[in-house]
Image (cartoon, rainbow, N blue to C red; front, side, top):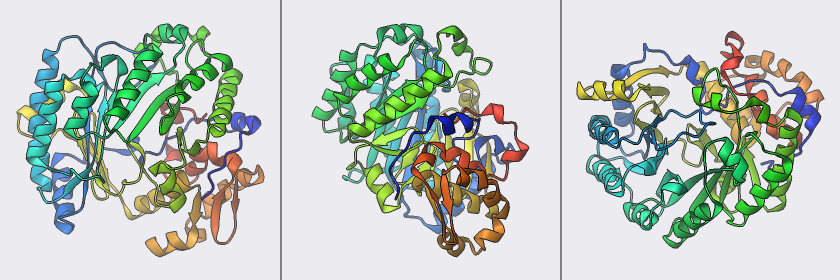
Length: 462
């Protein structure tokens, strides 16, 4: 597995276009409302009947935040009224019960993730309530193989929060930091002293959490190479097992809160690219391995190990060692993957609650994959996870002739090969170190839907 990375600013500028992130294939714009709750129930029951003891992954979306971060494009509800969370919890308990009817109690839940919003918006007692409800209806694994993670806002961490989460079974955390510079924090309305972040990481480790991920964003207002390098230095003092370095996509026409950001304060494209270059150089020098997309990990982290072993996978939670598990989605806007299907819950909290009050699952759209979808998903996943496509392996799994099936795609990649982004021979497509930051561009060549779509709905690749 090629884990080296070469930064070539000229190539990055040339290939900086809009495109999907490929957390799924087909991507979410292909989901349709013809795939409804009844379709989802049929697929889930058929899948469980085929393998009644297969492990499960659960995702719980907690949409609430106390304050708004101006850069945020997540599905969230900004409120100081905790009664809204109480109504949400009642609906969530109904959804857990309805989903459990489809999967039974013989399938161990080995992966669990709470995302948001801000999961720690919920009180300690209510987080315990959710975990108790999950344990009542699902078989939550308690062994060392479990991967139970939660996104936390360090500003919402109380004296006993991390110890409480550990007692509930969580063993991994992800912290939103974005930037430690006070001026940048004020510009995006997220004031978070570094000492608060540092304390949260130390408490997590003291309470037995085995992995810490830190989220940073580049391209925010008032950032420069110098200020962002300082942010990296402070974060590296914590030595997190994983780092996610997200590219800020400024889309104020789609996300109203981003209109609070002054466009004149955003770094110029050349400065933004220089920030990315400095980030890659610093993290590589610090011993981190580039996993793909926005993700870096220490060499002994399970993501880096899985990538070297050729077992890394990708799903809606990013890179994963267990993306083969059926993913059951809980909460408004949550997206699941069961068998060869994707499904999404209603986005608005009130609509999601109303559907559950009526005793029905809140699935409002989704997709059952065709044989061609499954083939292309496999190809794109190999690219995104391993930077390589072994033609014979794909042919054996899908009963096709790779060169004949993907003649057009391989032709479209000719210029990228000439530019040194990849090599193609009779046996394989291998992404080269200078092409690893452009995996999305390479994957787009195999996307059967993309030529018919409008690209502006997607973020830029760099």
